[in-house]
Length: 494
Image (cartoon, rainbow, N blue to C red; front, side, top):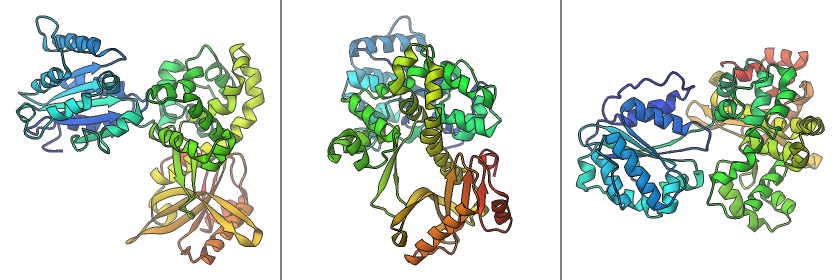
């Protein structure tokens, strides 16, 4: 970013988001001589609008939030709000978006001014040529751009739309100097945001609501479990209560992606994933469809951020798919098939019947993902003898036993000048006290890999447990034979 950064104080009521605020304020205050363009995206409820509205207020900029409307209505609203911002004698009148964009460029003739168009996809659906209109307005030699220091930010919650705004053959490809994705809070930030000190309770809550900030404030009105003993009751009065907005939220997340056509198919794909079908073939078989029929839905769900694809660390031609939003996994495993009972207020009965399935099908896989995230973002380099670079899962064939072994946490990283060193093989168990048998299994898998010619000299076995470890395993760690990661270590600084 050109020039010296101008410090704008972050609002006192904004939790975390330090990095996002720093990037946005640097963009807004860029003293460069030409108008610039930025794109901000992220799923709903992550606080994008709060961030951008706060930025506009702090820097004296203009903020316009679109909603679903005809082109004529949106132009009228835009003129009214821009007239209020500029203190014009009355509403400004615009017949075309070309005039609107030039009016925004005119705002920055004297100094850098941030301008936000929030929910940009709504405007683009009513006026499909709008991205091209912005492209033309930001032409390299166009005087209106060269004489302006407007810092235009286009924001949207439709990840499939926003993801394509700067890619491929999009008119705006190459025009933006900022592309920012506002992600959910990570598991540690989420625990702090919810004010939960008990790591076990924090992980259980995260397995239901993930790291979406709005779910605490707007959706459950700061109803936080008082402790582990209150978790079951909390689930019943929030996620399983028809009176709570959280109850229907998982089914509404796909509705945010208005470009989707056959939503029933997308929900069925998510249901297949939630029931344990992780491969494309398994999903297709569960749905009774040819594998080719689910290729496009899986791609779209990845673009929406609702599904993630993971490549096997040892079999690059094999991938698995996992639900990327905890609330969707919770809804499909616990609530979706019991809506008739839940609508009658029988949350306690449904939860009693579903709790064990929640722990195995939701919390177990979620714990494995949290362990991978811990390695990627929080583990110290000395923990695994190098800097983790790639963290994934893997399967290792065992021909002699006619089986294969799944490895929950595979860590590759940098040691010296080598960036592809296999640093660790790990197993994660949410509900089991892990012992020497788990360590022996990891050693056996290491031997199998060595037999295939893979360099395992730097491998450190790792056990991740939500229930603890035997004394023998603690002794093994003291002797440097294994890395142990419990809930306290997951949530404490490394």
